[in-house]
Structures are given as C-alpha cells and as structure tokens.
Amino acid sequence: MTDRRRLLQGIAATGVMLSVPSGAAAKAVAVSPWYQAAVIAARIRRPRFPARDFPVTDYGAGGDGMTNCTVAFARAVEDCNAAGGGRVVVPEGVWLTGPIHLKSNVNLYVARGATIRFSTNPADYLPLVFTRWEGVELMNYSPLIYAFEQQNIAVTGEGTLDGQADNVHWWPWKGKEVYGWSNGRPNQATARAALFKMGDDNVPVEKRRFGEGFQLRPNFIEPYRCKNVLIEGVTLRNAPFWEMHPVQCSNVTVRGLTIDSGGPNTDGCDPECCRDVLIENCHFNTGDDCIAVKSGRNGDGRRVNVPSENIVIRGCTMKNGHGGVTVGSEITGGVRNVFAEDCRMDSPDLWNAIRIKDNAMRGGVLENLHFRRIVVGQVRHAVLTIDDNYEEGSNGPFKPVVRGVHLESIVSGKSQYGIDAQGLDGAPVTDVFLTGCDFRNVAEGNIFKHVRGVRFRNVKINGVTAIAPG
Image (cartoon, rainbow, N blue to C red):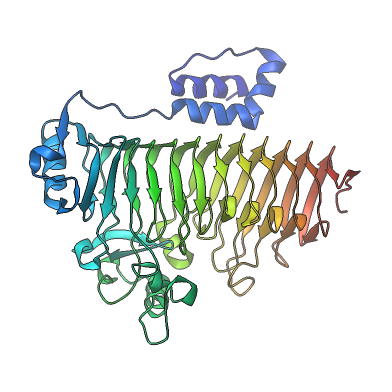
C-alpha cells in the first residue's frame, strides 16, 4: 500500500476532509508524526446524548451536604439508561453520596455551583468491583465514579467533585506520616505486595479479593472497558488515589478539567491500555504525575497484554507533580504514538517536565513519543528524564525497549539537568532526537548512560550550542 493510499484511508476514518497534496508532498505529510496526531485527534468524537434530563432532586436527593443521596443518584442513572439516555442533572448545592456507577448513554451533568461530596466511609464502596490498582487487576473497593463495559458515557458541567480525602480519610493508608499515618495503624504495604504476587503468579482475578481490611485506596473516576467516554469541565479535588483512570477504553476525551489533589498517588490522568485518547486544555496540580500513560504491571501486564496507543495531549498546564507528561511506570503492555504539544509546566515542586520510567520487571516496548512547543518555567530535576532504573531497575529478565523519543521547540527556564537519560546495560535507550530546544539555567548539564542514537539540531543549553553524545 502506498503512503498516499494509507494517508487517504486515515483521513476517511476521521470523517473530516483535509487538504492532501500529491506526489512527494503527500509522502512527506504521510510520514509526519504531527499529521498523524491530527488524524488521531480528528477521529475522536464526543458521545451524543438525547435531550432528556433526569434531575437527582426528582429522586429524593437533597443538596444540603448531609442527606445521603446514593440511592437517588443510582435511580436517576437507572431511569436515564432505561429511557435510552440523557443527562442526570446535579443542580446547585452540596450533594453527599457513595459511589456513582454510570451506564450506557448517561451524561452525569454537574451544574455550576454544584459540589458532589463523596463519602469517606470505606464500607460505602462495597460490594467489590472489578478494577485495577497500580496496573494489576483485582476485586476491590468501587471507584468513586465507575463504569464497566458501557458505551457513550460522560461526566460534564462546571461543578466540583470532591473526594474528601485528607490526612484523616484515605491518605493515611499510604503508610507515610506526612499523610497522617502513625506507627501501629494499618497501611497498604502488605496488601500491595500480596496483590503484586497474585498478578505475577497468575491467580484468577476473581480470587484477588481485597476491599475491607486491606487499605488499597479506590480510584476517583474509572471507566473500565468502555467506549466513547467524555469527561469535561468539572473540577476534581481531594482524590483518594489516581484521579482520572480510563482502563482498556477507546475514543476517550478528557477536556477542560481542573485537577487539584496534593495527596499520595493522586495522578491527574492515567489512560491505561487505552486507544484513541484526547487530553486537552486541562489544569493539573497533583501529588504525583500530572498525566501518566500506562499499560499494566509485570506478570499481570503480560497476561492482559494491551498497549496504550494513539494518545494526544495538547493545551494543558501543569503545576505541582512528579512529571508533567509521563509514560510509565506500569507500562508492561507497551505504548506507542504519544503526542504532547502546546503545554505549559512551571513549579519548583514539579520534578520533571517529560518523564519516561520503566525497568526490567515491567519490560514492554515504548516507542514513537513526540513532544513539541512545550514551555517550561522551571522544574526540580530535568526537562527530559528517561529512567529505566525505576524501582526494581535492572533486577529482572524483561528488558525494556525505549526508542523514538522526539522533542521539538521545547524551552525551559530552570532545572537541575537538561536531560537525564539512563537505559540499562544490554537494553539501551535508542533514537532520542531534539530539535530547536533551549534549556536555560541548567545547573548540572546532561546525563546519558546506556543511550544510543542521540541527535541534536539547534539545541542550546545555558546559551551554548549543545553537542549530542557520541
């Protein structure tokens, strides 16, 4: 198949008309990664919903912040789904509830001035549901907003979702004093190790039963094996754990979110084993990675064996966190075709702008990763970090493959390192390309270990033209 035919098929799949040159120009466009990103973004379509409203107040919900609205929310979702779809409307007020389980063709609409406060009683998140925790499938507490094998679902509006996690509720389970834990209190360590062993031992998922007594915190929003997902406009605060976590989903749009949680492992948006995802115009202030693309952990990741692919990120701002745009570390299923552009990152408490993390227990192939027009005010560690020594490091038989990392027109005002890229002996990082980048106030230069095929074109560090390592 010629490049032109392949390009035309890609355009046809988007349902939009784009100008396509012919001959050599068409071939150049066809192989352009950013044209590929545009084609991916164009075919991601928001779900549509019938013009029917189901106000939660019609089902007995009270917006006083004290009335338990769990049953009212569930009935509104059920009726909306049974009628063929529409909006479950949460009007102005404060609404206390347990988990909300979305069904096909339901848009949970949180109006301006509305705050949904989620219960801090772990018992309210039972019975157990099929979920994923740090890249391993299990039966655990329900996520605060959850959907399993549904189509055409959404959470939209200008209201607020408040997980109410703090140093009294949920966060102490991390097992760190800074988050309210103290000696003698339970924490997640034993359950976490047991879960990972079950994953590596291929214990059937239905027998990996956690929940009460195991201190594995629930995710905030988790659509699992869903198609046509939209999360738009709302503010997420005080998450127990990962905040926006689509798993094995396709055609996902995450747009215009404000995410503000400073607790442990409060990643902002973690698409895992997903295909065709658009994340745009979101603001992140997190206690962990702002955006982290994932695809399963270790043995369980190899069993599921689904990559994340075709992820487009644009127009986002990142404040505090471990990484602005991250790939990993639960990345065993691999990732390909990640594009991030026109983002701004700036905080002394943002560790890295672009972060890739893997090791020899995860393995996986990480390839075709593109970043351009990103403005970095300051970060604590590096503009680009590639870390194959994360956690277990080289202690494993599954050597990671990291190849094809492209940075274009990235500017940075302050960092300890410009680039910190470290592969493994026998598994080098390959093909790292930088074009038109300018890193200023870099305290300690670059680090390259076990990296091959680095190319610089018009790259400056502290005002001096940088030379790629030989």
